[in-house]
Length: 389
Ligand code: GLT
Ligand code: MN
Ligand code: MN
Image: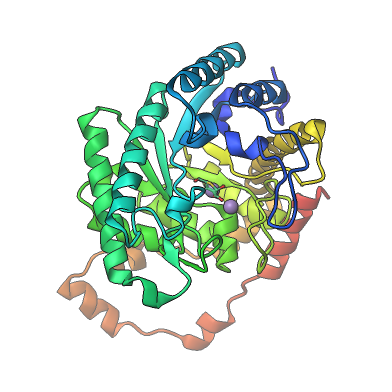
Protein backbone atom coordinates (compact mmCIF):
# COMPACT_ATOMS: atom_id res chain seq x y z
CA UNK A 1 0.00 0.00 0.00
CA UNK A 2 1.42 3.40 -0.91
CA UNK A 3 2.14 5.89 1.84
CA UNK A 4 -0.84 8.18 2.42
CA UNK A 5 0.99 11.22 1.09
CA UNK A 6 2.21 9.45 -2.03
CA UNK A 7 -0.03 10.29 -5.00
CA UNK A 8 -1.47 7.72 -7.36
CA UNK A 9 -3.20 8.29 -10.73
CA UNK A 10 -6.52 7.76 -8.91
CA UNK A 11 -6.01 11.14 -7.23
CA UNK A 12 -6.50 12.71 -10.68
CA UNK A 13 -3.63 15.17 -10.29
CA UNK A 14 -2.57 16.74 -13.57
CA UNK A 15 0.03 19.22 -14.83
CA UNK A 16 0.10 21.32 -17.98
CA UNK A 17 2.98 21.05 -20.44
CA UNK A 18 3.45 24.77 -19.75
CA UNK A 19 3.70 24.30 -15.96
CA UNK A 20 6.54 21.86 -15.33
CA UNK A 21 7.85 22.86 -18.77
CA UNK A 22 8.07 26.52 -17.75
CA UNK A 23 11.58 27.73 -18.59
CA UNK A 24 11.64 30.59 -16.09
CA UNK A 25 11.23 33.52 -18.46
CA UNK A 26 9.64 36.59 -16.86
CA UNK A 27 8.89 40.10 -18.16
CA UNK A 28 12.36 41.23 -17.05
CA UNK A 29 14.51 38.18 -17.64
CA UNK A 30 15.40 35.47 -20.10
CA UNK A 31 14.73 31.77 -19.47
CA UNK A 32 16.77 30.19 -16.70
CA UNK A 33 16.05 26.58 -17.70
CA UNK A 34 16.44 24.68 -20.95
CA UNK A 35 13.22 24.34 -22.93
CA UNK A 36 11.96 20.74 -23.11
CA UNK A 37 10.07 18.96 -25.87
CA UNK A 38 6.54 17.75 -25.02
CA UNK A 39 7.84 14.16 -24.83
CA UNK A 40 10.62 15.23 -22.43
CA UNK A 41 8.07 16.97 -20.22
CA UNK A 42 5.92 13.84 -20.12
CA UNK A 43 9.00 11.82 -19.15
CA UNK A 44 9.74 14.31 -16.37
CA UNK A 45 6.17 13.85 -15.06
CA UNK A 46 6.71 10.10 -15.23
CA UNK A 47 9.79 10.59 -13.03
CA UNK A 48 7.74 12.71 -10.59
CA UNK A 49 5.48 9.68 -10.06
CA UNK A 50 1.78 9.30 -9.28
CA UNK A 51 0.62 11.90 -11.81
CA UNK A 52 -2.65 11.10 -13.60
CA UNK A 53 -2.31 13.20 -16.68
CA UNK A 54 -1.05 16.09 -18.70
CA UNK A 55 -2.78 19.08 -20.28
CA UNK A 56 -1.75 21.24 -23.21
CA UNK A 57 -2.43 24.30 -25.31
CA UNK A 58 -2.39 23.50 -29.03
CA UNK A 59 0.95 25.29 -29.39
CA UNK A 60 2.55 23.72 -26.31
CA UNK A 61 2.37 20.54 -28.31
CA UNK A 62 2.66 21.72 -31.92
CA UNK A 63 4.35 25.11 -32.49
CA UNK A 64 2.16 27.58 -34.37
CA UNK A 65 4.51 27.55 -37.39
CA UNK A 66 5.26 23.79 -37.50
CA UNK A 67 4.98 22.06 -40.87
CA UNK A 68 2.60 19.12 -41.28
CA UNK A 69 5.44 16.62 -41.11
CA UNK A 70 6.99 18.29 -38.05
CA UNK A 71 3.57 18.13 -36.37
CA UNK A 72 3.33 14.39 -37.09
CA UNK A 73 6.76 13.70 -35.59
CA UNK A 74 6.02 15.73 -32.44
CA UNK A 75 2.64 14.04 -31.96
CA UNK A 76 4.07 10.59 -32.44
CA UNK A 77 6.92 11.26 -29.93
CA UNK A 78 4.38 12.66 -27.47
CA UNK A 79 2.10 9.64 -27.92
CA UNK A 80 5.02 7.28 -27.26
CA UNK A 81 5.94 9.19 -24.11
CA UNK A 82 2.34 8.90 -22.89
CA UNK A 83 2.48 5.13 -23.45
CA UNK A 84 5.82 4.80 -21.64
CA UNK A 85 4.65 6.76 -18.62
CA UNK A 86 0.98 5.62 -18.68
CA UNK A 87 -0.06 9.27 -18.42
CA UNK A 88 -3.38 10.40 -19.88
CA UNK A 89 -4.28 13.66 -21.58
CA UNK A 90 -6.96 15.18 -19.35
CA UNK A 91 -7.58 18.69 -20.63
CA UNK A 92 -6.78 20.69 -23.73
CA UNK A 93 -7.02 24.38 -24.51
CA UNK A 94 -6.14 26.96 -27.15
CA UNK A 95 -3.37 29.49 -27.06
CA UNK A 96 -5.27 32.62 -28.06
CA UNK A 97 -2.88 35.03 -26.36
CA UNK A 98 0.76 34.61 -27.45
CA UNK A 99 0.59 35.44 -31.13
CA UNK A 100 0.58 39.18 -31.95
CA UNK A 101 -2.48 38.55 -34.14
CA UNK A 102 -4.39 38.32 -30.84
CA UNK A 103 -2.94 41.52 -29.38
CA UNK A 104 -6.45 42.97 -29.02
CA UNK A 105 -8.31 39.79 -28.17
CA UNK A 106 -9.46 36.66 -29.97
CA UNK A 107 -13.22 36.04 -29.71
CA UNK A 108 -13.77 39.65 -28.62
CA UNK A 109 -11.38 41.26 -31.11
CA UNK A 110 -12.65 44.28 -33.00
CA UNK A 111 -11.48 42.63 -36.22
CA UNK A 112 -13.89 40.09 -37.76
CA UNK A 113 -10.97 38.31 -39.44
CA UNK A 114 -9.19 37.84 -36.10
CA UNK A 115 -12.44 36.49 -34.61
CA UNK A 116 -12.78 34.02 -37.49
CA UNK A 117 -9.14 32.95 -37.13
CA UNK A 118 -9.68 32.43 -33.37
CA UNK A 119 -12.63 30.13 -34.09
CA UNK A 120 -10.65 28.20 -36.69
CA UNK A 121 -7.65 27.85 -34.35
CA UNK A 122 -9.90 26.62 -31.53
CA UNK A 123 -11.67 24.05 -33.72
CA UNK A 124 -8.29 22.65 -34.80
CA UNK A 125 -7.08 22.65 -31.20
CA UNK A 126 -10.23 20.79 -30.16
CA UNK A 127 -9.46 18.20 -32.85
CA UNK A 128 -5.94 17.86 -31.42
CA UNK A 129 -7.21 17.48 -27.85
CA UNK A 130 -9.76 14.88 -28.93
CA UNK A 131 -7.07 12.94 -30.81
CA UNK A 132 -5.35 12.38 -27.44
CA UNK A 133 -8.55 11.74 -25.47
CA UNK A 134 -8.94 15.06 -23.62
CA UNK A 135 -12.26 15.26 -21.78
CA UNK A 136 -12.25 18.86 -20.62
CA UNK A 137 -11.70 21.90 -22.82
CA UNK A 138 -10.59 25.09 -21.07
CA UNK A 139 -11.16 28.66 -22.22
CA UNK A 140 -8.92 31.26 -20.65
CA UNK A 141 -9.42 34.59 -22.39
CA UNK A 142 -5.93 35.93 -21.87
CA UNK A 143 -6.33 38.80 -24.31
CA UNK A 144 -10.10 39.27 -24.06
CA UNK A 145 -10.17 42.71 -22.57
CA UNK A 146 -8.97 46.27 -22.93
CA UNK A 147 -6.58 48.88 -21.68
CA UNK A 148 -8.96 51.67 -22.62
CA UNK A 149 -12.72 51.21 -22.66
CA UNK A 150 -13.02 53.55 -25.62
CA UNK A 151 -11.61 50.74 -27.76
CA UNK A 152 -14.42 48.20 -27.33
CA UNK A 153 -18.07 48.19 -26.39
CA UNK A 154 -18.20 45.82 -23.38
CA UNK A 155 -21.75 44.70 -24.20
CA UNK A 156 -20.75 43.89 -27.78
CA UNK A 157 -17.61 42.14 -26.50
CA UNK A 158 -19.67 39.88 -24.24
CA UNK A 159 -22.00 39.12 -27.14
CA UNK A 160 -19.03 38.18 -29.37
CA UNK A 161 -17.69 35.88 -26.66
CA UNK A 162 -21.12 34.28 -26.24
CA UNK A 163 -21.44 33.64 -29.98
CA UNK A 164 -18.00 32.02 -30.05
CA UNK A 165 -18.79 29.65 -27.17
CA UNK A 166 -22.17 28.79 -28.73
CA UNK A 167 -20.46 28.03 -32.04
CA UNK A 168 -17.81 25.84 -30.41
CA UNK A 169 -20.33 23.92 -28.28
CA UNK A 170 -22.15 23.10 -31.50
CA UNK A 171 -18.85 22.05 -33.11
CA UNK A 172 -18.10 19.69 -30.21
CA UNK A 173 -21.58 18.17 -30.50
CA UNK A 174 -21.25 17.87 -34.28
CA UNK A 175 -17.93 16.04 -33.96
CA UNK A 176 -19.13 13.94 -31.04
CA UNK A 177 -16.17 14.98 -28.91
CA UNK A 178 -18.07 14.90 -25.63
CA UNK A 179 -16.07 17.83 -24.27
CA UNK A 180 -17.05 19.62 -21.08
CA UNK A 181 -16.11 23.28 -21.51
CA UNK A 182 -14.57 25.03 -18.50
CA UNK A 183 -14.32 28.83 -18.47
CA UNK A 184 -11.40 30.32 -16.54
CA UNK A 185 -11.58 33.86 -15.15
CA UNK A 186 -8.81 36.31 -14.36
CA UNK A 187 -9.15 40.02 -13.53
CA UNK A 188 -6.05 41.43 -15.25
CA UNK A 189 -2.61 40.51 -16.61
CA UNK A 190 -1.83 40.37 -19.45
CA UNK A 191 -4.56 42.93 -20.30
CA UNK A 192 -5.13 46.01 -18.17
CA UNK A 193 -8.72 44.84 -17.68
CA UNK A 194 -9.96 41.41 -18.67
CA UNK A 195 -13.59 40.59 -19.36
CA UNK A 196 -15.18 38.03 -17.00
CA UNK A 197 -12.79 38.93 -14.18
CA UNK A 198 -14.03 36.35 -11.66
CA UNK A 199 -15.57 32.89 -11.53
CA UNK A 200 -18.79 34.53 -10.36
CA UNK A 201 -18.98 36.51 -13.61
CA UNK A 202 -18.76 33.28 -15.59
CA UNK A 203 -21.37 31.56 -13.41
CA UNK A 204 -23.76 34.37 -14.34
CA UNK A 205 -22.80 34.16 -18.03
CA UNK A 206 -23.27 30.40 -18.50
CA UNK A 207 -27.10 30.34 -18.27
CA UNK A 208 -27.20 32.81 -21.21
CA UNK A 209 -25.58 30.25 -23.55
CA UNK A 210 -27.27 27.94 -26.07
CA UNK A 211 -25.81 24.83 -24.40
CA UNK A 212 -25.44 25.79 -20.75
CA UNK A 213 -25.33 22.11 -19.73
CA UNK A 214 -22.00 21.69 -21.58
CA UNK A 215 -20.31 24.63 -19.93
CA UNK A 216 -18.88 25.05 -16.43
CA UNK A 217 -15.97 26.86 -14.79
CA UNK A 218 -12.28 26.35 -14.17
CA UNK A 219 -11.50 28.53 -11.14
CA UNK A 220 -7.83 29.24 -10.39
CA UNK A 221 -6.64 30.06 -6.87
CA UNK A 222 -4.20 32.74 -8.01
CA UNK A 223 -6.71 34.51 -10.24
CA UNK A 224 -9.36 34.93 -7.54
CA UNK A 225 -6.68 36.05 -5.09
CA UNK A 226 -5.55 38.69 -7.61
CA UNK A 227 -9.14 39.96 -7.42
CA UNK A 228 -8.91 39.98 -3.61
CA UNK A 229 -11.52 37.25 -3.22
CA UNK A 230 -11.99 34.24 -0.95
CA UNK A 231 -11.30 31.40 -3.40
CA UNK A 232 -13.13 28.80 -1.33
CA UNK A 233 -16.39 30.75 -1.53
CA UNK A 234 -16.27 31.05 -5.33
CA UNK A 235 -15.55 27.34 -5.66
CA UNK A 236 -18.40 26.53 -3.27
CA UNK A 237 -20.78 28.55 -5.45
CA UNK A 238 -19.58 26.66 -8.53
CA UNK A 239 -20.13 23.34 -6.72
CA UNK A 240 -23.60 24.47 -5.66
CA UNK A 241 -24.45 25.27 -9.27
CA UNK A 242 -23.01 21.91 -10.44
CA UNK A 243 -20.51 23.83 -12.54
CA UNK A 244 -17.13 22.88 -11.12
CA UNK A 245 -15.85 21.12 -14.27
CA UNK A 246 -12.13 21.60 -13.60
CA UNK A 247 -9.87 23.39 -11.11
CA UNK A 248 -6.49 25.13 -11.36
CA UNK A 249 -4.61 24.78 -8.09
CA UNK A 250 -1.66 27.01 -7.27
CA UNK A 251 -1.00 29.84 -4.84
CA UNK A 252 -0.63 33.58 -4.84
CA UNK A 253 -0.04 36.41 -2.39
CA UNK A 254 -2.80 39.03 -2.44
CA UNK A 255 -2.03 42.26 -4.26
CA UNK A 256 0.83 40.85 -6.35
CA UNK A 257 1.42 40.01 -9.99
CA UNK A 258 0.39 36.58 -11.34
CA UNK A 259 2.73 34.43 -9.26
CA UNK A 260 1.53 30.86 -9.98
CA UNK A 261 3.28 29.46 -6.91
CA UNK A 262 3.33 25.81 -5.80
CA UNK A 263 0.00 24.78 -4.26
CA UNK A 264 -0.19 25.87 -0.61
CA UNK A 265 3.06 27.85 -0.78
CA UNK A 266 1.60 31.25 0.13
CA UNK A 267 -1.57 30.65 2.12
CA UNK A 268 -1.69 27.13 3.59
CA UNK A 269 -4.75 27.89 5.71
CA UNK A 270 -6.73 28.94 2.62
CA UNK A 271 -5.46 25.83 0.85
CA UNK A 272 -6.64 23.70 3.79
CA UNK A 273 -10.20 25.01 3.63
CA UNK A 274 -10.19 24.52 -0.15
CA UNK A 275 -9.05 20.89 0.06
CA UNK A 276 -11.58 20.29 2.85
CA UNK A 277 -14.31 21.72 0.62
CA UNK A 278 -13.32 19.67 -2.45
CA UNK A 279 -13.03 16.45 -0.45
CA UNK A 280 -16.26 16.91 1.50
CA UNK A 281 -18.12 17.80 -1.72
CA UNK A 282 -16.59 14.66 -3.31
CA UNK A 283 -15.32 16.63 -6.30
CA UNK A 284 -14.54 14.03 -8.97
CA UNK A 285 -12.87 16.17 -11.63
CA UNK A 286 -9.21 16.72 -12.47
CA UNK A 287 -7.06 18.68 -10.05
CA UNK A 288 -4.66 20.59 -12.23
CA UNK A 289 -1.61 22.27 -10.73
CA UNK A 290 -1.42 25.37 -12.90
CA UNK A 291 1.76 26.57 -11.28
CA UNK A 292 5.45 26.65 -11.97
CA UNK A 293 8.66 26.23 -10.04
CA UNK A 294 10.63 29.26 -8.89
CA UNK A 295 12.79 30.77 -11.60
CA UNK A 296 15.80 29.73 -9.54
CA UNK A 297 15.00 26.01 -9.76
CA UNK A 298 16.90 23.48 -11.86
CA UNK A 299 15.37 20.28 -13.27
CA UNK A 300 15.69 18.36 -9.99
CA UNK A 301 14.00 21.18 -8.14
CA UNK A 302 11.20 21.30 -10.74
CA UNK A 303 10.55 17.65 -9.87
CA UNK A 304 10.45 18.62 -6.17
CA UNK A 305 8.02 21.41 -7.06
CA UNK A 306 5.62 18.98 -8.77
CA UNK A 307 5.88 16.44 -5.95
CA UNK A 308 5.33 19.25 -3.45
CA UNK A 309 2.05 20.34 -5.06
CA UNK A 310 0.57 16.85 -4.79
CA UNK A 311 2.05 16.07 -1.38
CA UNK A 312 0.66 19.29 0.10
CA UNK A 313 -2.78 18.45 -1.28
CA UNK A 314 -2.67 14.95 0.26
CA UNK A 315 -1.36 16.26 3.60
CA UNK A 316 -4.19 18.81 3.71
CA UNK A 317 -6.67 16.07 2.81
CA UNK A 318 -5.42 14.14 5.82
CA UNK A 319 -5.65 17.28 7.97
CA UNK A 320 -9.26 17.72 6.84
CA UNK A 321 -10.01 14.20 8.05
CA UNK A 322 -8.23 14.88 11.36
CA UNK A 323 -10.21 18.10 11.71
CA UNK A 324 -13.57 16.45 11.24
CA UNK A 325 -12.68 13.60 13.62
CA UNK A 326 -11.16 15.85 16.30
CA UNK A 327 -13.21 15.67 19.51
CA UNK A 328 -12.69 19.37 20.38
CA UNK A 329 -13.75 20.45 16.90
CA UNK A 330 -16.75 18.15 17.02
CA UNK A 331 -18.02 19.48 20.31
CA UNK A 332 -17.43 23.07 19.18
CA UNK A 333 -19.38 22.44 15.97
CA UNK A 334 -22.19 20.94 18.00
CA UNK A 335 -22.30 24.02 20.17
CA UNK A 336 -22.21 26.42 17.24
CA UNK A 337 -24.87 24.81 15.07
CA UNK A 338 -28.21 25.14 16.78
CA UNK A 339 -30.69 22.97 14.96
CA UNK A 340 -34.40 23.58 14.97
CA UNK A 341 -36.25 21.15 12.75
CA UNK A 342 -39.69 22.72 13.18
CA UNK A 343 -38.24 26.17 12.59
CA UNK A 344 -36.48 25.05 9.39
CA UNK A 345 -39.68 23.33 8.24
CA UNK A 346 -41.42 26.68 8.52
CA UNK A 347 -39.00 28.53 6.30
CA UNK A 348 -38.13 25.84 3.77
CA UNK A 349 -41.14 26.66 1.61
CA UNK A 350 -43.56 29.57 1.63
CA UNK A 351 -47.17 29.03 2.64
CA UNK A 352 -49.68 31.46 4.11
CA UNK A 353 -49.83 29.38 7.29
CA UNK A 354 -46.04 29.34 7.67
CA UNK A 355 -45.90 33.08 7.14
CA UNK A 356 -48.61 33.62 9.78
CA UNK A 357 -46.84 31.37 12.29
CA UNK A 358 -43.55 33.18 11.73
CA UNK A 359 -45.19 36.57 12.04
CA UNK A 360 -46.78 35.59 15.35
CA UNK A 361 -43.60 34.18 16.91
CA UNK A 362 -41.86 35.92 19.80
CA UNK A 363 -38.06 36.19 19.63
CA UNK A 364 -35.90 37.08 22.60
CA UNK A 365 -33.26 39.25 20.95
CA UNK A 366 -31.14 39.48 24.06
CA UNK A 367 -30.92 35.75 24.47
CA UNK A 368 -30.16 35.34 20.73
CA UNK A 369 -27.34 37.83 21.04
CA UNK A 370 -25.86 36.26 24.16
CA UNK A 371 -25.41 32.68 22.98
CA UNK A 372 -21.72 31.79 22.87
CA UNK A 373 -19.95 31.51 19.51
CA UNK A 374 -16.44 30.33 20.45
CA UNK A 375 -14.90 30.94 17.02
CA UNK A 376 -11.56 31.97 18.51
CA UNK A 377 -11.33 28.58 20.15
CA UNK A 378 -12.41 26.88 16.92
CA UNK A 379 -9.85 28.75 14.84
CA UNK A 380 -7.03 28.16 17.32
CA UNK A 381 -7.79 24.41 17.37
CA UNK A 382 -7.87 24.47 13.54
CA UNK A 383 -4.47 26.17 13.49
CA UNK A 384 -3.04 23.65 15.96
CA UNK A 385 -4.21 20.77 13.81
CA UNK A 386 -2.61 22.48 10.81
CA UNK A 387 0.60 23.15 12.73
CA UNK A 388 0.72 19.55 13.89
CA UNK A 389 0.36 20.24 17.62
C1 GLT B 1 -1.77 30.70 -18.73
C2 GLT B 1 -2.70 31.17 -17.64
C3 GLT B 1 -3.35 30.03 -16.98
C4 GLT B 1 -4.35 29.35 -17.86
C5 GLT B 1 -3.72 28.67 -19.00
C6 GLT B 1 -4.78 28.17 -19.93
S1 GLT B 1 -2.49 29.57 -19.78
O1 GLT B 1 -0.65 30.11 -18.16
O2 GLT B 1 -1.97 31.98 -16.72
O3 GLT B 1 -3.96 30.39 -15.78
O4 GLT B 1 -4.98 28.33 -17.13
O5 GLT B 1 -4.87 28.87 -21.10
MN1 MN C 1 -2.25 32.06 -13.13
MN1 MN D 1 -4.98 28.62 -15.01
